[in-house]
Length: 454
Image (cartoon, rainbow, N blue to C red; front, top):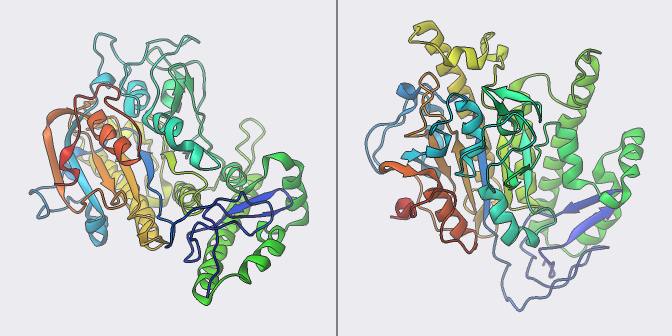
């Protein structure tokens, strides 16, 4: 039988701090592994699983005709773009009618892509400037991190799948800071995203007080699991059979992600070009890169390293190609299809590709035990963007999915039709409340999306 283990127990080794997934032994008693912070609780049963919140940003809008589902409530029909999510439909809802008014020009002229990303999580109008006097607003993830981020080692994590400049003019007089970031800790200070999986991996597992240890591990070509082996053995002696199997499965997942990070680092070295050096460990294909960043976000939630995350699948205005699905023309170029049917079909393929990657992430969350349920049960994942139809550059009736049950506070599996022009920030207020945040209004909110539970 497992003996008591704190939810805050960590395994330590040379330059490594490894948090643990939920185990049956986590009754809130004192931590047992070396270096772990002791936490005492009077709870008699397993510690309740925390609620997590993440925002997945996809660029350039969608082909809305192929995106939009039909029907109502639980009887809705998935669209051709959303059809890959059919096996997961009980885990997410499509929310229609949401608007990002502050991404509209509102007198500022062109620049929809910059405003789309800058306003997506802030609900504020970006100051139009290509200089240093940027100004937008605190984003919803950072609003939450200020209030609940202290419960975890990292208040939040910011990930991305595409590099972009942080300064200069990137969209019709708007600073590149707006197109490159969706997370903002202050009105004039973005939270830079990590695009290199190896950097994100070290952030999750590395010990900041022993930075030199990373190079030693790489030199020895050893797994981080080797460096926490002693602590792992001590922990295993306190666990029952079921928890030992869970720990073994978790370590297998960590090692599998670690090996993919190592392969990406090796591949990047092979294709390095002097005129444009790529990051140290970015996978060669968009599919591999996106999947790996999703898996790192999953690990961050599973270990409770953080409960708040953002992932930019691409920067708005991205002209990335997707040769793995036969698309060699740029995404942004194709989004301006002007009703060219060949271009529209390629945009549909890109939209579906992104949905498939998100579906894989949902599937893995739903298969990961966590407390009295799964990681997806205890999460709230918003997937979407600040542009609706990429050809029109409109910002009403946004393509938005909400996955997960929010710890039992959200009833998924439905098409939730909010009144047209409902601020996207109304959804954020509802999610912030479920995270335990004190919030009356956020951004340009006018209320809440009450139908998340109806």
